Every structure is written in C-alpha cells, then in structure tokens.
Amino acid sequence: MSRIHPLAIVDPAARLADDVEVGPWSYIGADVEIGAGTQVASHVVIKGPTTIGRGNRIFQFASVGEECQDKKYKGEPTQLVIGDNNIIREGCTLHRGTVQDQGITRIGSNNLLMAYVHVAHDCVVGDNIIMANNATIAGHVHVGDGAILGGYTTVHQFCHIGSFAMSAANTAVFKDIPAFVMVGGNPASAHGMNFEGMRRRGYSAELISALRRAYKVVYRQGLTTSEAMAQLAEAAEQFPEVALYCASINESTRGITR
Image (cartoon, rainbow, N blue to C red):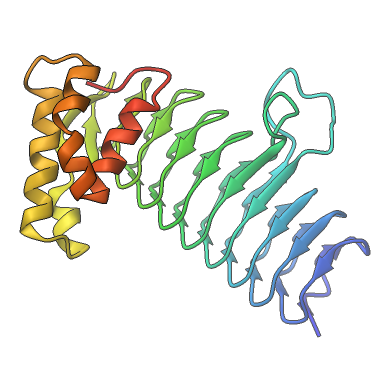
C-alpha cells in the first residue's frame, strides 16, 4: 500500500503507485499521478494536472504543478510532466504550462534541482541537468541535456540553453547559449567551453580538439554565422558533438551569447 502519513492530505482522485511515500502536512491534489518509488517529504504541495514519474525525491516546501505566473493564464487545465529519478530540493517552484505554448511544462529525468530553483511555465528541461541553488528560468526556456546552471543564474524567457552548456554563479542570460559553451556575467558572455566536463565524460583528445577548434571558428575569427558553419561542415559530419554545437547555433532565434 502507499505509505501516506495520516497528516497528509491526498485527494481521492489522485493516482499514486502502491509504494509512493507522502510525508506529514503535504497536499496532493486531484489530477496528480505519481509513479512507483517516488518520495514526497513533508510540507510539499503538488497540484494537477501533473504527472510525476518513478523514483523521484521531492523535498519539503516544494511547490509542484501550481498555476503559472503569467497574466494571460485564465485557469486552463495545462500540465506539468516530470520524468524519473529527479531530486527536487527544498523550496523549488515548478509551474504548469500555458495554452499560448504547448500547454505543458516538461522536466526530464535524472536531474538535480537544488534549493529554491524556479522552472516557469512552458519550459522544456532535458535530462541529467544540474540547476544550483536559486537558479531561475523564465517562461518558454529550453535547457538541453547535461547543462549546468550555477547558483542564482537567471535566464530570460524564450532562451535556449544548449546541451552540456554551463553558467557561472550570478549569471544573467539574455541570449541563447550554444551547446558545450561556458558563460558568466551580467549580461552573460562566453568564456570558452567546458573541456573539464568533456574529459570527465570520457571524450577523446581528438574530439575535444575538434570542439576547441569549433569554438574558435565561431568566437575568435570574426566570421558571420553562415561563414563559420561552412568552415565547420566537415567536422560536423565527422563528430556528432560538433554537429550538436552547430545545430544549437543554427537553430537560435534570439542570437547566441558572445
């Protein structure tokens, strides 16, 4: 049976797997579905429509699936969808989407959202991401797999953070960040690539060298984007990671952080 503390409030319409744990003084509303092995601590509020996968840990005072902070929101039944094996620490606020976008805020799997992280409406957060304390992403932001946002990072609405990108603490992001690129400052500026992270992931010296060259072509040679992409076409065919870097630049709609 579900291990629900007698002081928790769980709406009869909520759907919890048999082994879900819910601590005292937590509230789980209707239209909430929680998968097997998920642990909900005390003083957590989860509202729906929200779907939470397997093996997640949600710490005290988190607010999950609340109405978004968008003046256009008029009570539509939008959603929050969370994957598996995420750690959602104290005071996180994760909001549902809006009908002006896809109506869904999505958070993937194996992510660490540290204390007081905010994920706004219609965001798409990938897998294996770290958002450090008080990192905040505004509405419609997309964060690629493996990205790291330092503490107190703020990301402007509609920005895209490329896979394996990294921001320093107290960074203010107003433009897109290409894959693998490190940024810092207010406003953010590019400071190379996360080569140490590449080595930890087991990237070969040849691949790291190719990404280093790709960064220099875009950021150091004074080329237009189309000129830089033409120079990198051969490397993009050889290395999927260079192709990922190039795609994150080609698909940018707000311009890239420089």
